[in-house]
Picture (cartoon, rainbow, N blue to C red):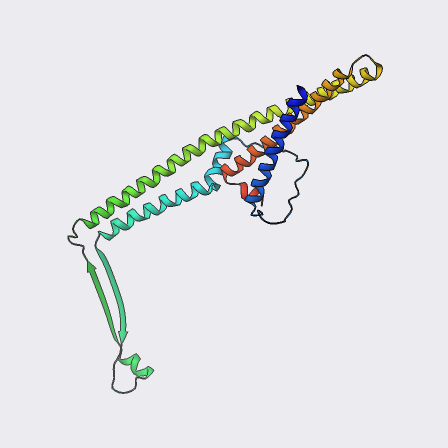
Length: 246
């Protein structure tokens, strides 16, 4: 029964590994090529977890999606100002000077005979079929929609950030516990080996101790890799993923 359970677990993990490796090659654009990917057999996990306030400020500064929505709000505000400006009177002025002569104009002649001119134009918008008023309403509506989208996105990102930090804090507590479990299982295995050599323990007790070490080690490795994935998720949320893994 234990053999069948262990074999089933092995097959499941091999399938998960193969699928993940295939997805990795696809993400890197290597599907259909002979390029090899060398994966490290051991990855050191260094959990440096920021506080919520620090992570939130980093997210507001670096998150591409939030920055795009923020720029849309800025653009919508400019649109409102432009709509208002188009409905107001405008004043323009132009200056110039020239000289005319039937003969060739020399520099001295131009300096003595040039004529200055100035034009001042005032444009006052009259009735335009409510088009200006509608343009202002539309621009204000677009601003309101942009601000609502930004506010919703910030709230969603805040919730996601809070959840990600909670998971990381949980991993930070869980990893040392599983390390202690592994150390305890290794000590039990050493004791079982000594007892087996002395003939005071049977092979089943030794196999149980070996299995406990394997299970503890597997749980620790899985937790560490899950923590690494969650750390990458946090970097993606706050917008520092590309900079960190460049």
